[in-house]
Image (cartoon, rainbow, N blue to C red; front, side, top):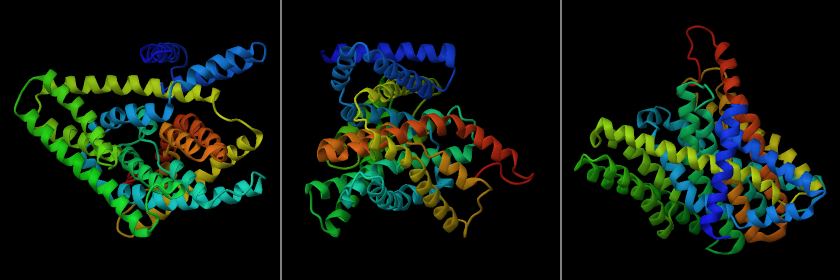
Length: 424
């Protein structure tokens, strides 16, 4: 099937599932369409018991969609840029220490702890011993919270602004850091780059700080260009060019595309709104990017649900996936609790901060994309990690995504009068 037909098919399925969700389930769009896609996948398996060719045809069709390339090389830039446009720098600055610590130290600590737990858990359930690097790679891909899942669900979760800023800000930045850590570890596992501590440190500096500088420079140039005109089609086009151009250039320069596009989006979404756009342009820019965000989110979560058809399922893989759910949550809790404990020496956190930040740290499609890359690079030995990633992601989006708002409201209702409603 040619590319246009394939994209058309995915879009038609996504639109139909979005309609069914809005008409009958009335769940947040990302959760609803993914649940319906999971139902479609399970129904295909059921019918396949009587008509095996149906499952084979569905798998053959899905395998034509390279999930990793589709997400990491196409969708991610637009989704991150759209999310960053609506985050206020003032809000981020007020939470900079929490966000910065969780997005850096938190990701590294979580990677190590999940890796250690993974290695010994796989031994305990009879899968066998996997190399330490493989275990740490699983830790790297499952530790960062996914900005796509977070942004799509928190909009309708009903949490307070301070918590939303922490979770959203962390997810926007720890995603880029997590990908850098993953790339560094994968390079060690496949001997694609130097293995010394200095080599890894230079790779990290180049990927992270190079991306921050590139995003800031490109955002500043775009801001200056927008300031010279007052024409919303041209300004919307400039924002689109910035998103695609900075992400592509970051890849060519071997810096982090996600971090570069987030910084660029923050600059245009804040400084650009205040000093370079008319009210009419701001409205049309928001409308355009909200439509892009909604469309790609729905298509992405449909693909996540349909990926069930092509994953390597086995009893041991499923057992480890179910164990990985509380394991990842426990490590997330330790990373958040440690961060809050250290930072509470200089600032106050309201009751429930650790619980809300732990449960609100959702995993999503980026983890699945990285797990597919891991399987491609390492072969069959990584199938158990791919299955576990999928199980954790589905639990995170469905269970955590549907309950984080209720949890926030319950904690907020128990907050004594006179105290902040949520984390400060």
